[in-house]
Image (cartoon, rainbow, N blue to C red; front, side):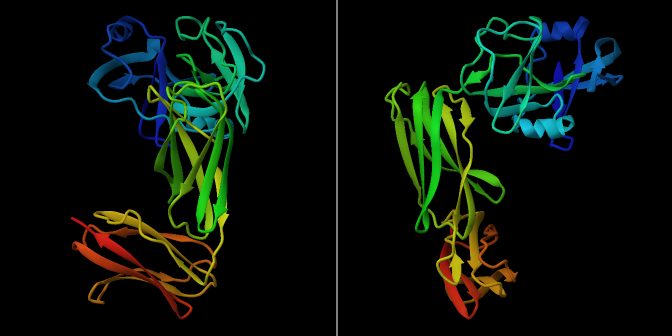
Length: 357
């Protein structure tokens, strides 16, 4: 049994307890301990072949605290696990875009396979029948998603699957981003689709991914063996700099899989650039970006409709030609219309912001 809490260098830290026996095993069989159960565990920690664990005989006692929810898996690549595996040991992970380079047929017990993505390869360890449900299951022939934990043995780090892997229901054959003036056109193609609801278009903003829109599958029931083409235009004012996009494919049963990311470089068309705030209207927070062509002092100021300065959002010297994002706290502003003004190089640009309560 593996469990984790919310400490550690990745935001989580995991341990192994087992093999289960006695009361612990019975609580698992009876369903008193399931995925998401919160536990207090007391025992003696050991390090077997590099894997941190509390062996069954070293478990002093445990208390079932509550039934919580399963933590969200951390999204990682194989190269990250190769270089920083100790940080992810026994933690719930998600690795997209995996494939078996040489295996075929069905899984055998107590067998180590090799999986790879675009960055690296790693061992994929199928244990005995009392530890996995994969034995006798078909080995995926295409790309699939792994959700499970990272283990460690004397041979190094390895994925340790319990349940059959999720084969991607969509074979994506292309995904590109092309700048078209101040907007970006995203295009992608599929060779086949199975039970595909559609695609969430996602945009990386201030270090996190935001959903822009949902593009439904062109297949009536989500399944087709014919190639399909999709296009989506990002209808927002993108500032100068690098912009990254990806697709989150959504199955009819709501399982998801992520595409590779694409990026596009947007250049400056004038001396100043000030994006429209988003969201707008705003109630709590909104985000905008600005850029100046030359590395000179700039100021971004918020005014009310009486022309009174409400607050200074930025004052300094940004990098020339590089977009800078600003998080605007609107929670303390009264409802109404405001003007955001960028001043630099003796020029100004403005955008309107509406605050609602």
